[in-house]
Length: 537
Image (cartoon, rainbow, N blue to C red; front, side):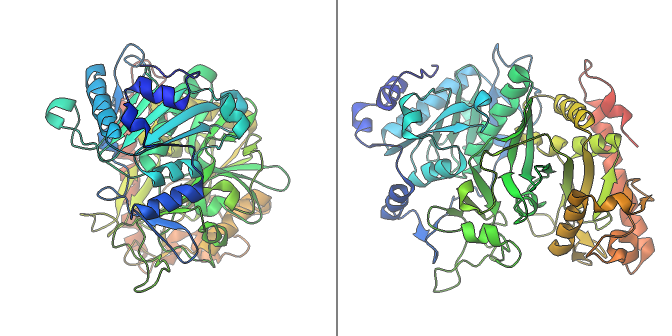
């Protein structure tokens, strides 16, 4: 059943199959204040000492990539890169799950929100979210673009999200792996989310849709990156997996933020997909991240945080629920933002990695081929204690720094990025926000002040007069000095007490890179260009 943009919200719900009794418990386009009050009345959240709403997402405190499915039909059969993440599900199973969600919504109170994705009007997409949770509607208010009253009068609906965390699938009959599921249907233009209340499933569902539609229909590159712009109009991109520092480094008082997570690169330049930020809260400190800290106020939504005992003050160091504590807030909660949420093509691109092995330089400059290699590798590392079973550093490779959100083959996105980098003559850098002086457990985390100094030096052109030399293991060019950063930190081997131990760890990580890339090259489609294989060092 495809969405019809001319239908009013109640008429659309009725067409979905929502009964008259269900419509009596229906709330449309409620304000943040009302949604917060409704959440408090339902005992589903509490306020912190600054007035932000704190909720818990239950069993799931992060996304579940293994439980995301794409309907395999005439539209998707030959276009989706089917793999362990882009898993097929039949149209019949989609209909069964949709019927389950609609039955559940008929039994619940409902909140509906109309909103947009894409700040560039040429690509703007109308989204309608129907949910059984008022705080999920608040999340959508924070994270998507907020239409004006005039916009709502002429709202053009394109995609619908039906969100019912209390609706559980039966894997025996519903085609799922377990009770929770996210299902994307490109023909019906609908996303179903059940069994999980983690709000990231909502935003990443739409991100996946855009990463499919924009490249194929408009030649626009979708990117899992943050973006900001300097006073002279120079745009910078920050690619990275969760926890590598995209939000932290892009939220810079000396530059204006375009967005912290999802962007497109089209004919006119860079544009944000979203209208808000979704920042990690673990170990958040006012001194090091003042803008994010100040954004946690009335209207912001905190997820899975704990308070200091007997108070409503957040204990940002508490990870007893999850390492992945989060806060969402509208982007205008930040002081330094780009008003249009758009920018020209970037002058600098930073690939961020949190190297828990402690062997990558804090900053290195990349050739074009090295940039493509890093982009297709998408490396970071998990550290002990971040999830069950992780007792030592573990390498993570996620193609294009966002494999779970890429419905098309990674080579397509890499080819698009490579052409843009050449055309715009972009400077590409690898930034290690992880460890120095040893691996996790032995060394120390590279100081944020040092990382900011390195990024600022790259942005301001200070490295143009500083000598570089190739890293002996990984080959990237490493600067000999940087204002505000001790010289020894720039050469990681010099920071280890046992240089031979460094050599062992560096060789191990280098081998992991090669193994990952060899495996990636072997699984390329026969019709793909051999570029990926040729980048193996």
